Image (cartoon, rainbow, N blue to C red):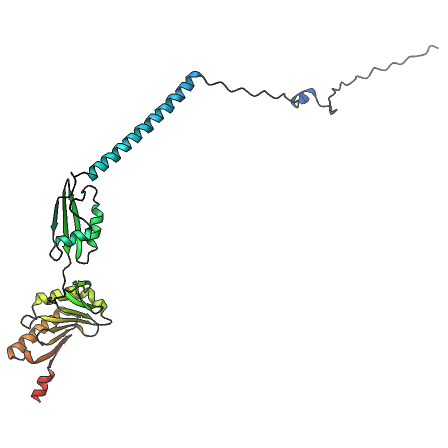
Length: 300
């Protein structure tokens, strides 16, 4: 018998791509992980002759501007020194208005100003502040009129009272604030002002009280007022000159109290009893009249 030969189909082989790592990845993936060679750095371009010329032109222009600025600054400094040190703006005319107690010499001393001072270099604010610091000056204004004139206008404080301060008499304004020491000759005829402890709040009412008292003319004919006293309990007290009566007026319902005082004074004057009156006190709707102690003794 002939032998039978059995043939098997050959097994189709599988193609495997080999890589260095032996991972068996496809060629496309391996190509993405391939190391790219480093690029060589690009060389900087050499500056052209045109750019170099532009840079030097800009540098020269900046230097020229700096020189020009320095020249202008020096010219301004020289011009300012020439103006301030020259005679054209020297002070020759000084006008002072509103002063009565202060003379021109004292004002010049206050502002440290002398003839020939340069009006252009003068600080107006400094002069006004110096004047405002003087005890007699309430307001001050200064006007410069080029080239050689200065106009000073002052408003002086008006003394209304005298007060005692540190053992000396001082002039005081309408609110009782001290101004300056009283002249040594003692020629002032202003009334003395006293403020008792606890009556400081009445200082603010003092100008209106005195004004209404003056306008009412209630005390006309009783002589001048030598002393005004502010009291927390008795109100406003007035001591007349030449040993006159003492008037004590409550400030509550002040104007009505003034009218009551006027009627009482008129009645006492009509009866000829005012000279013997020691104290007249007005409070509310009541008026008390006390005779002097010596008159009471004589009558007894």
